[in-house]
Image (spheres, rainbow, N blue to C red):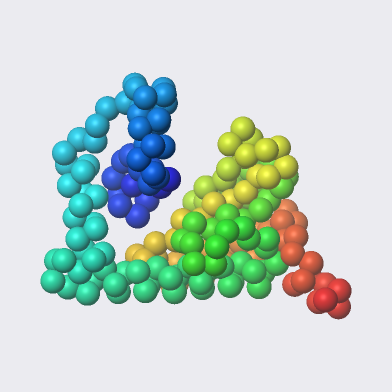
Length: 176
């Protein structure tokens, strides 16, 4: 299952499965029964992105963007880990969830970041359980190193104020 909203800049999503699973979902899923097909411009956007990523447009732009995205994701993840944050997910994923746990701290951090010119996405209850609140960063190939460093600098300044650095390996290296 995946989405076309982030990497593809479109709408909708997909499910890759055996034909029997797809047939079952088509017949029994209320979403499949009550939704509509993608508009042609949205479908074309998805196809165009795939062509660029696969190099079918005659350039290596897609490969360069993928490499830049991997580099940006690694840079942000490494920086967040060094600051003492607990990060979930695969190290190669451009979606970087940072655990906050406390909804009050999460909302306070969101407001303070916005005051300093950094908009962050926070995810709390009911999208997560009560104790699994998080900040969700979506890294892009278009982010510059300066953008990412600015993010790390703002978070370093603010998270010590609201005490969101839970990774004891950074704060207490003698516990290793």
